[in-house]
Length: 398
Image 1 (cartoon, one colour):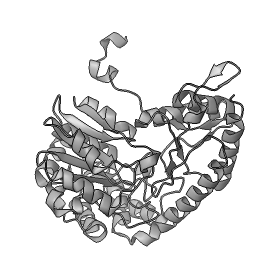
Image 2 (tube, rainbow, N blue to C red):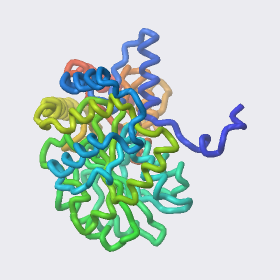
Image 3 (cartoon, rainbow, N blue to C red):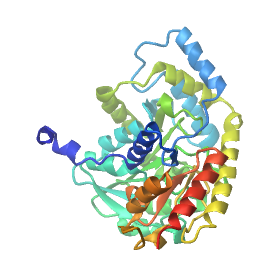
Image 4 (cartoon, one colour):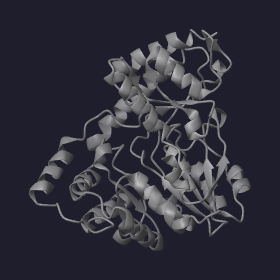
């Protein structure tokens, strides 16, 4: 019956991160011992003070339709957070709360991109960026990066990528999947290009802001001369271990915020009122209340780098944010095991899953086909066992 499906849905690819997670979950249900390092989800539980705020919201009957862009009191708290943490002046009217940062991204892209508009994607990029661009009828323009440049693009690359058809750029810092973090100086270099194109906009995805190991986070919109060209996307999933609560938000020029509210009003309306009140408790709290998660992630990063660097053929950059490693594994392309060839990262991921019982995600899904993404949002014991399995399984390839 696929012939009855729309061209739109048939052209949309399944999320590779979700697909690999589903496959490993299915194997576990069948009694197979699989360690999944494929999904971008903190392994911590939501902090108690946030859960208590949700319980209070239930008892206070926050069970009716909230305003489409979110409760005013939540948007005011987000406004204060932007000023406190990012030196950004977004009024409550410039903020739209959505059902996760993914919906925030979709709202902005569908509000700005017309058929044929070019959208610049520095690689590697988060998997859903590309599919959302396709959904809007945009044309992706890839700007490559690699381990050699720490998975960050340079100003001259951006300058060369912009054409008269360029409408938007989407990037993340800290980055999913590479863990790269752009410094203030590096962002200023990009800013100097962006400011020369007043009809060109940038989505700055800052969902991993609170997991930054080396420096203070810098928001692209904090540069005054491009403030009106930047849409800042954030949320509570990663920094507060609230993936299932589904709360994301944007800060944007008022006209974009109004467009996103209009778009959201026809798709989902507001996200859950209970989730909003829980998010409010987290966002207005002192960030030090959840800093222990960042400290733990940094220790795990160092553990994983030490273990992976002991494996021949794995080349790892040192990520300074998020909770991923994005090693180059192209050393293994062209090798095989019992007649099974490894031609690309997808082949290697399936080989590691089926022979080593470890789930990773192919870098092809993120625009860097020579890499794989490894999430270290797991316990030390799981990580140690997973790397041991990876090492033993890769040793089979000749």
